[in-house]
Amino acid sequence: MRDTSSRRDKIASMLRKDGSVQVLVLAERFGVSTVTIRKDLKFLEELGVSTRTYGGAILNESSNRIVERGIAHKEQLYTKEKEAIGVAAAEMIEPGDSVILDSGTTTFQIAAHLAGIQGATVITNGLNVINRLSHFEGLEMILLGGILRRKNMSFFGSHAEQALKDLHVDKLFLGVDGFHLDKGITTHFEPEAHLNRLMLRSASKIIVVTDSSKYGRICLHQILGIDEVSTVITDAGIPDDYRSSLEDRDIAVRVVD
Image (cartoon, rainbow, N blue to C red; front, side, top):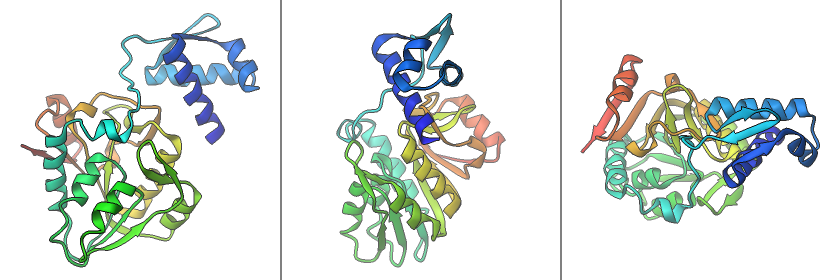
């Protein structure tokens, strides 16, 4: 599965770079059959990345997929909204809770507002998150180790995955790259999506924290469907149709100022 995801990632990158791809060229490059490549292109078309053509595919100019930015760039975006979301999310963590904070700039803001919490256990794969938490003596902290991905300063891989299999937590706070009513919660990096899915299995309650720029966006790898979410904490820019759809599904929506 990971070979398939890696190949599709590379094909999507080629589409963004060149605007089009050819089945025969891709089959030769990746050493797979043309049938396999056509399945890849069908998958990318269903995501809205590209449109299949005779013998290949072309990039959708109006694609709502986004290019992943590094953490330094993300830290400069929607800072007030992320801080307000972080404050609201931190208020949901009580003494004695066990929680997972996913890596990211929004979950970092949750960590930054946990100074007054005593006796909670916080698990994270985010290097920036654990660095912030280390200042708060009242918290127990567990870092999911593994391979450091410098682009977003998070750990992934078999070591982190194995650690999660032995854990059960009260709440997971999950940041997102893409939030789409049909395609669900998505991210750019397949190993991160896999780790996030293990986080879901470890948690009783799933709380998505996202600024409103993420609505309608789709990344290559799905983490979960919308119906699996317990609560969404977001800012006032959430589209009306998204808010009503979430509430119709009995998903709690908390909008911060």
